Image (cartoon, rainbow, N blue to C red):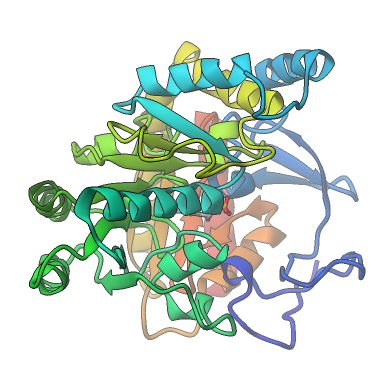
Length: 420
Ligand SMILES: Cc1ncc(COP(=O)(O)O)c(C=O)c1O
């Protein structure tokens, strides 16, 4: 299969450049797609329309937590489909209550708002932070501090909170009220924070990912996050974690903040929460009263179907001891990636990651990009996704087996052999 670069090389969604020969022309071209149409999935495997089988180390970009077509998820969703699919937040929704209870009894949070995606969850967090800034800190124009390397989504406020300028290009003016510091850089953060607070309260919140996904699998340093926690607590500023990519078991603990041993005041979820179904959530500790009726809403947010999906994913993670498996498979994957990084030391500098969010970091001064490796892997029937041009991301289903990790590493090795 030949992979063709699109003539208009640009960052595209998730940095892909390619064009699908089978892509319908009636879609708005927001995605540079790989040239295959996926039609079926089972566990860690997907099939294209020609019947070719691929090992899926993308999993809907860290989303299909239980793999494809999981039996338990199929069963509970089939039942929910027949029972009730959607009503409205005008009425009580028992599945929503049940999911909120599951989330709050398995995290520090006490209350939840449901929406449909990661960007929406962050929008809700941004609105909550601004309102908190107005009412609790008496700030007229509250500022939210974010990292320069961050990714928080594509809606206008979420993209404005995203520090990477390539995502702003063409959409200026971005929403004001966001200022940026360098990730894991104590001095950069402290200087910005102190400068803004010098003449009185200005900052409503700090919004940050415990591990940066799209930014290149950057692992948050404990000492840096301790500083964030201390500064926020001392100044009554909210600490918000974007756990859209790290939440729901991806790191081997249910929530990314457990890896750091630091609790934020607010965190957001989406991706793996619904195991492939659209649901996002905003979770708060003591701030349930900041939003009052009428302040925020979502037509589809917390619908019975999506909540049933997330509940099933959560319960299956616990019942099948999936967190332990993520730790074991994560360690196996890491060991294999270190060997690969050593073997192809002309391409890679290092590996980084926790659990089943892993990355191979490419050298700066080479021609090969992460996308070249993704394309080569595709020929080996292995699906991978870049995290920027310099990091190859590996985010398989949380249920991937020992044998499948071996196969993944074998296919990756073969893909690299062709490039070196
Ligand atoms: C950390 C993080 N936040 C937010 C988002 C946006 O999520 P969504 O695409 O569901 O809007 C993403 C998506 O990649 C993400 O990785």
